[in-house]
Length: 284
Ligand SMILES: Nc1ncnc2c1ncn2[C@@H]1O[C@H](COP(=O)(O)OP(=O)(O)OP(=O)(O)O)[C@@H](O)[C@H]1O
Ligand SMILES: [Mg+2]
Image (cartoon, rainbow, N blue to C red; front, side):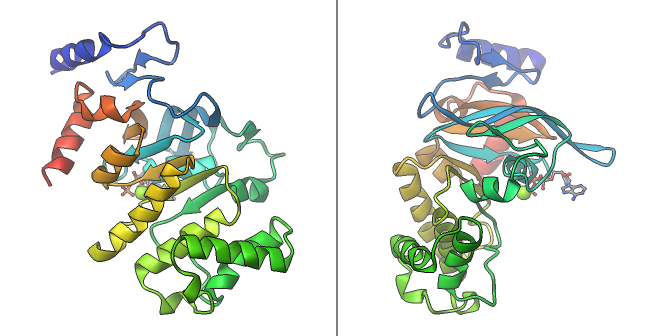
């Protein structure tokens, strides 16, 4: 087993620049490379991040750089720590060791203004998390006014332009319960965008949707990616990963086992754990 991994890795490594300090084979035999980034500018820099829930270590020495314009798909088995990893990026989950910088600002520093930082990192969850008692328009304006201090008129204008972008301006006066799941998720994306984030985090944004609504949400995400938005997406949508992502992070048991370009990931020749996961997902 070990030998197979080593041979596979060796054949992949032949084409890599091992002088590049970000290219190495990690402790699991997975490739970690600096290839395939969208730009040189790092927006999210995670260094050796570890986190525990009591005695249970949920993240172990997670290191990853997300560059401006990168679309990073985070995948891996259930319970591997994907949600926890991306929630540490905007301070929704504290961590005990390591460092995370978002545009140079340290997330774990107690002096950091977390509400301000969160406003710069849009987060879209599986279950939309819209305010049920507010109209769609108010869902989009409340944080702009309260966190960014925008004037109501400006916030409304911005909200309407983002609702228009996701094809939902006609729904502005309605309440979330009056919209379909796919529409609510597009509202959640528009709400995050109206804060002018430097990056967007998605945690399985399509997994609670009926099949016919998945594509309308993926289409919005694809458009965002094409416009150059920096994105970290936890998703099982491997079609999205293979077509839209430029980087893949594969997690297992709290470790980042693979962190490489999309092409390297799908070309094979990786850790046994990622291969087993991929074959399960692709044969599903
Ligand atoms: N609040 C918590 N307290 C204790 N353990 C937790 C807590 N939240 C998550 N965990 C554990 O941490 C591990 C990672 O959870 P996480 O939700 O990050 O996994 P995941 O990869 O997102 O899984 P899934 O694909 O099912 O969403 C799991 O073993 C989970 O049971
Ligand atoms: Mg999860």
